[in-house]
Length: 338
Image (tube, rainbow, N blue to C red):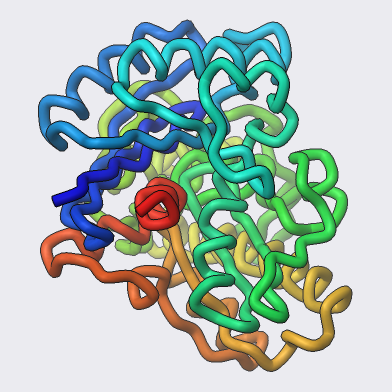
């Protein structure tokens, strides 16, 4: 039996997916915020290794090189590669079109390694679908990647290029800042400018709406207080210069719906921008991944596209199926390396 574990080192999460002879059996996610240093990542690696078991081979991708802990993206890639090599046996790193490289090659290929996790997922989709629009809505960002002719045909590769092409959208289901989702909001029949402070995140919006998937909100709230509907209403109220007691629950629910709608529109806009540059896939289905599957399904409906989920493309044990979509890049690595 051959065991391969795919690892995705993000700025705030570590994800690990175990594949046995190409069949995915476990998918796990841990909080590991890098902003204050690498200690949380080391702790997450220790916990993950204890829970997911040994592997014949470990394969790694990352976006954590963007964290403030590192002087530059190049520095982040080199340091995270060195750290992963210490923590994992027989480890190689995903370098996009170059495939897998050894940790000793990380410095030379840092530009291909940096934030290449989207490419791993899209490359796997391209092996299964001749044409599709791949959308992965995670905790912080949304990837929108065109697939045509069985190949990844993204216009950008680096974060900067992908941002300009609409293929990377800084909006997420949990960590997305409410103040970055819209500039104003409707409240009691008036347009109200937002307070330009990080008082609330999109996790509050979806908690109020009862649409926050279980187990995906691993980080602290914006104010460090409880993860409850009442707490989320209080945080959201501050975005419009108010207290929760200033209005009834229905008012805050309507406000939460507005921010959800604003997020969906931003993703639709970027998806349409991407499709405008690849008209051949405009009628092709969307392949959805990440923790925001319901949002992507709504985007697909608005675009008049079918929608399949990432796990449908893989051989996955039933008990791991739901988690696989949440850890798509790590799952893709485990399968691509099999």
